[in-house]
Image (tube, rainbow, N blue to C red; front, top):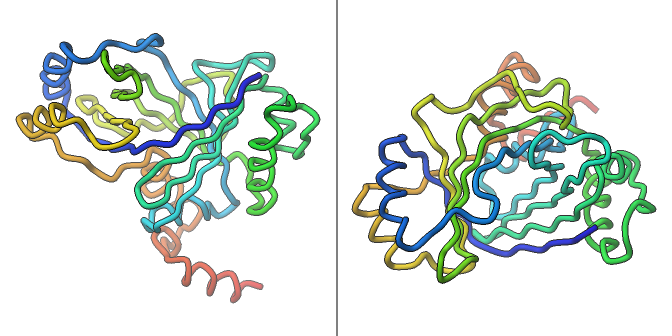
Length: 255
């Protein structure tokens, strides 16, 4: 069982398939498919009953955090998955995760049972269970997509990923199967992410400028929440975009 820590900048872009193909041709001299190449990713995002974490994220606050359980392809109870705590502050993304069997991850996040952890995983495990208990987190939304990943020939830490067929659901939150009910992108759209340890290389910036590629603010879970889930949670729509202050006022009124 392993632990991993990432610190990097991440920028997102929504592309048409023709622009994506043109970009890949230009990147070919400097980037290759990474060792994983093309694969599917499935994640279960944990949140409160009224989706407090994602609503704070949508408000674009300086500090954001997410907790998710991730697998690469459908996962059975004994398959390896990743319990991840992802934080973003001042544009920098910090991701801490541990790998463990799915049945152990469920015990860790569901019952805060640290006995499933190896000694080297104790610190990150404690951070995960603290987040679960602090917010009262529970499985909330399933997100799955098909990814192609590139890494730099000279700098392997420079990564570009292309996500297609982004699909979500908020029922049957299982990693054992990947199909989902709702597709987020149009058939001709691709979500690209650039993951870099520092500043974007000048040569990449020039290519993006030539093709008219500009960054966007996009969250898979956030988009699903805003466009679908909030309507079910709050039929009147009053909480789909409310601020922290409004959310606290509503909670006090209901107390």
